[in-house]
Length: 168
Image 1: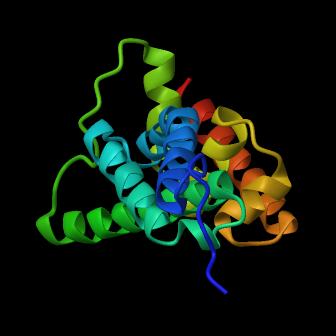
Image 2: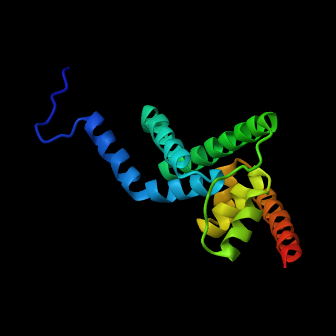
Image 3: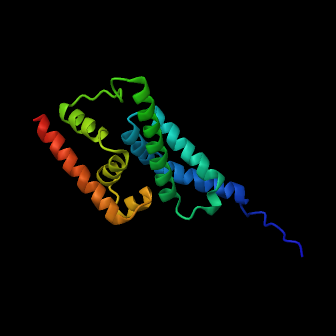
């Protein structure tokens, strides 16, 4: 038995491409913001998000929740990039990790303090307070349990509070 295609049917490849473009248009800016806040570099953030979308495109038909998949991919790639940078900087003995210029002293203090958090704590803080995700969504993005997210956020807040109170 031969299956005939309907003239008005959209081929699967075009349908998939349209779905990817729709997700891209809807989530690109938010994902770049997450990557930027994690890495401190807009160029690296854009590369990370583009790589995450290209990787997702290859396996699109197997992804159940594309926004969650992409968010986790961006966090993982950002964290990996940051770890690699830290290892390189240790060997190069560089004086500063970021070259971001801020205009507001308070923003500079908070951003600088966040940058000194461990990568997983930093990711949890960004996902919670910048992206507005729930603890369950953060746990999915980081690949851990919600209790771990609570612990990460609690330790992050304590570190931020101590660091910012020492600056005043």
